[in-house]
Image 1 (cartoon, one colour):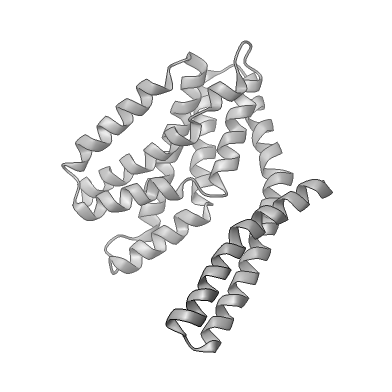
Image 2 (tube, rainbow, N blue to C red):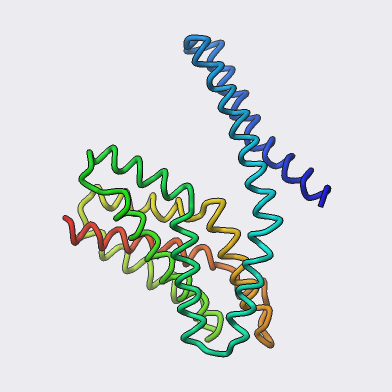
Length: 231
């Protein structure tokens, strides 16, 4: 456990320190913003470091193990419908809890001056993720090559882009990106690992490969459909 904590701290510092160094160099040699604003940035960087460190420790300690346990338990029930419904619910709930999704919805709400309500966007993104997590689990069970699903998904995205207002097209691709955040990715991957672990003859690594890629297609499509409806 102590080794894991040290590794997480090192990873967080690797992510934050380069940003602090670059901003500091820009501050002292280029823009020279008021010193009070710069110290606010430093204080924020310290809080982000502490928060991200504690969050990742929590993910390692609880989220990953519980995700694998849930994946193996729902698979062991032997009911395909139960498994797909459970995968949808977990995908939906974990997306609603994803901080990146809430940040995006808030920014879109501000940029659109309330025309695109944040809660509607969150629900649309969560529905897309939930449906495609279920589809990804179904792919594992049926042994469907991921190439077919990815191709079909992106063909649908291209077709829908011709009918979706330009603003929603941009938002939809951002929505696909924010679902690969620190909350959703560990849990979805752990869910897939747990599901494949109890399937005889299945390779955990190969069958869970592409799970996040499939899940990120869902919100792109759902937000585009939202754009067609509201457009």
